[in-house]
Image 1 (cartoon, rainbow, N blue to C red):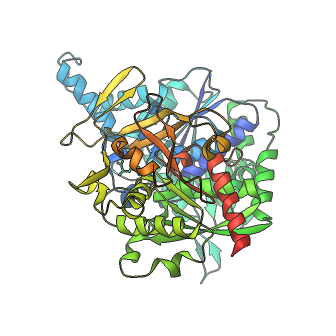
Image 2: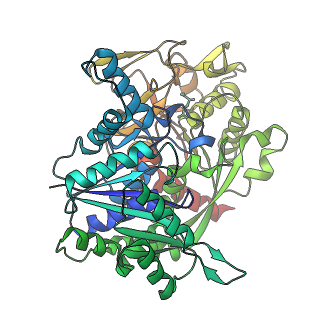
Image 3: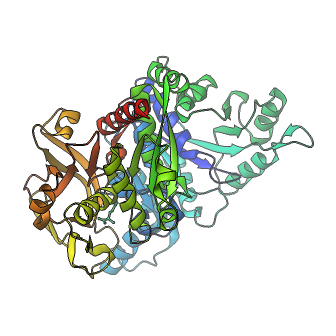
Length: 541
Ligand code: GLN
C-alpha cells in the first residue's frame, strides 16, 4: 500500500522545498521504505525544455528522455532512485491531455471544466505508475496563494479525502523571518500561509519551519496553537552548512518520526551513516582545488545545479574541497583568458546553446590544451573543443557548428537521424523545438586502451543526452590526425560520444551529461577522475 505525502510551500518561494522533499525521501529510505518522488509544476509550459536557464535553472533529463524540473535532480541525488517521465507534470501537460481528450470526444458531450476534468487528470497523474512503493512524495511547485496552484491544491485536497488519513499526509514548508530590530523570529507569515491553505480545504498535518536560527520553544508552541497542529509536528528546519547535512538535521528534529507516527507505522530507526560520512568528508577536506567553469548562464547558478553537485562529489571522492570559479565566457571577448584561467587547476566548459559566448569557450579549450591544464568539455563543451582542434590544429580556420549558421567546415552539424532502440528518429532544420532533441539514456562504446575506458573500467556505458547537434564524422580522420581520439562512439559507430587527447594530462569531451547521474554516495567516475587530475595539477603550480 502506497502512502502519499503532499508537500506545499508558503510565505516565499525558494525555501528549499525540493531539498526538503528529497531529504525526507532519504530519511524514509534509510528506515527501509521504498520511496518515489514527484513534482507537480503549476506553470503553463508543457515541460521546462524550452525555457531559458535564467527562467527556470537547469533542465534535468531522465533516463527515459523527459526534460524535467531540477528538483528531480535533488530527488535522485538524495535517494538514488532514477526518476521517470511520469514523475514531473506541469499545468501545460495536464491541459494538453484534457484538451486532447475533448477533441477526441472522450468527454461524451460534457462541459469540460477545471473541476472535475482538470483535477481528475492531476489525480490520475499522482496515482499513476506506482507499484510497490511504500511512499510517494509529491511536491507542489510554487507558493500557496498563487493563482496557478489552485487546481493542484484542489486535486490533492480531494485525494486527501479519497485516500484517507492513513494514506495521505500534508506537509507545509514555511519561513520564520528574523526581525533584527525586535530581535524576534516572526510566526505571523506562517499563520497566514496556513490560513491560505485552510481556505482551500487543506489542514496541514506537519509544518516545516525554515529559519536561520534556533526557534524558541514559545514560538514553536504558538505556531502549533494557531496552526492547529501538535507541538511535535512543528519541525524546525534550520539553515545548514552543506545540503547533504539536511537529512541528518531534519531527522534530528523529528521529521521522519512524525511522518511514521502520522501513518501509525512502527519503523526501525533510520541508518543515516552514509550521510554522516559524506558530511564529515565535506567538512574536513585534506586540500582544495579550483575549477573554472566557463559558461554562459553563470549569473544564475541554478542553471548548473547538477554540475556543481557532481564537482562537489568529485571532491568528496578525492577528499578535497572544490572551489568553483564561475566565468562568463563572454568576458573573453575583451579580457585575456590567461589572467582568469591561470590560477585554476581544471577547466570545465558545460552544456550550452547558441553562438553568444561560444568564442570564449573555444579560447578556454585552447588554453587548457596548450597549457596542459585538465579540461572537461560537456556536450557544448565537447563541441567547442572539437572546433578548437579543427581550427588551431587541423588548420580549418572556418570550422564551426551549424548551430551558429551555415559555415565552410561544419565540424559540428545538425543531427538529422539516429537510432533509438530499433527505431529511427528523424529531425529537420525547421522542426518543432520542444522535446525534439536526442534525449535520455543512450549507450556508448568505449575504445579499449583509451583514458575513458580506464576511468569507467568497462566497454559500454549508458549516459543521458540532451543535444541537437553532433560532431561530424566526415572530419574524423582529419581530427584524429591532430592527436584527438574518438574514444567513445554510439553502438552503430555513427555518433561520436567522447573525444580525448591521449597526449595531455586530462583532456576529455563528452557529448552526454554525466553530471546528471552523479550521487554524493556514488560520485561519477569522470568527475572523480577529473578532480584527481586537478589535484595533480595543483601540485604543479
Ligand atoms: N547546443 C548543443 C546541441 O544542441 C549542445 C547542447 C548541450 O550542451 N546540452 O547539440
